[in-house]
Length: 135
Image 1 (cartoon, one colour):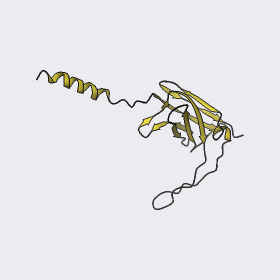
Image 2 (tube, helix red, strand yellow):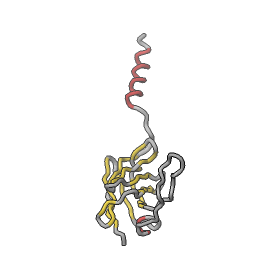
Image 3 (cartoon, helix red, strand yellow):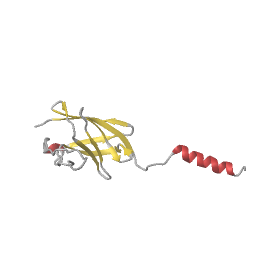
Image 4 (cartoon, one colour):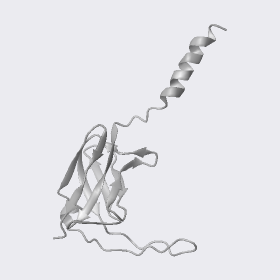
């Protein structure tokens, strides 16, 4: 019986510590405004120099929270190029799917296809706001 105690102790430590997702990331959230007003439905993408991007979508109050993957919140720690876009294609409207109307890009290219936005993600919790101008 005594030789099972170390094995049980090791198993307990593994269960308590959980699994390491192997991603050096941190929580990122913030608010996006355009000319001082919150914008709903904008897609915020943080693209690190190397690695997978993180994405979030703004709600009615302009707030976003980044997701690295379906099961991991946040963004990789380090420098990021930031892209914010409002363009979307029409989708849904078939069967029980609600129709989502398409929308042309309303933000200047300096925030998306020719972005000038950058952000630094630090360890811990990050609040990164963007106050954009429509012109």
